[in-house]
Amino acid sequence: MFGSLRIGRPFGIDLSLHGTFWLLPAFVFLTAYMGGGLPAAVMNTGVILAVFGCVALHELGHALAARLYGIRTQDIVLYPIGGVARLERMPERPIQEIVVALAGPAVNVVIALGLLAVLLADGLALGIWPSYQNPVNTFLARLMMANVGLVLFNLIPAFPMDGGRVLRAVVSWFTDRVTATRVAVTIGTVFAVLFGVYALMPPNPQPMLLILAVAVYLMGRQELEMVRREAVYRRRQRMWAEYDIPTARAVDRPGRPEDVWVYDARTGVWHPAPTRRNLFSPI
Ligand SMILES: [Zn+2]
Image 1 (cartoon, rainbow, N blue to C red):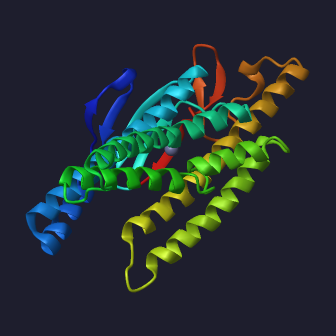
Image 2: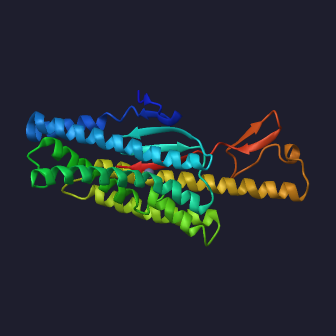
């Protein structure tokens, strides 16, 4: 029912719309139509679709930065609350994680500056700025502000949002990766609670923000679990190496907490299950 629709394959990366994606433009169209008629509905829906185009470019920014470090991106999916780039892993060197995390917002900075240049050029030509009488300029001005919003919001240090990844990378300069992730996830959870409380405040409850709060909470915990599992796996590998134990016979089945493992019958070795990283960029 909620399957994804593939709409393209930029740079060899599948770009899809989640089945629930259309709920947002449909909602925006209907509310604008009831408030301001067809012109407002067309304008607002056009803006929201263009914003999602910018979100897709933001995700491509993450994906192409990851590619610099030899990390592939399985796909990019757009949801009503934002985009997710599913990377096969995250770079572990802090500086590389910072580059990958900031590449997304950097794309929106470039788009916003480009739109500002167009608006300024047009405003200078007309002697006024912004010339809101012109619907094209209204559209471009709103798209520019949306991109500024994307940059600011995604830089909130709410792991696993981009700002939270930068925070995790900075903390991991001073401590191990599991502790750094735990610190970032704890701060992310505080933000998730704040988002949730704000979303429920009368008189204007915001269901999208509530969904975002839940997503930040769940995705943060999921990634913390993956980082822990990888640490256990590495400890075990070091132990195997130290005692010269052939890995194939060292364990017939790892127990908890590393129970999400896969067995490679060809080599006879247990591996952690693939640990894809979701770079989540809400709108
Ligand atoms: Zn992002």
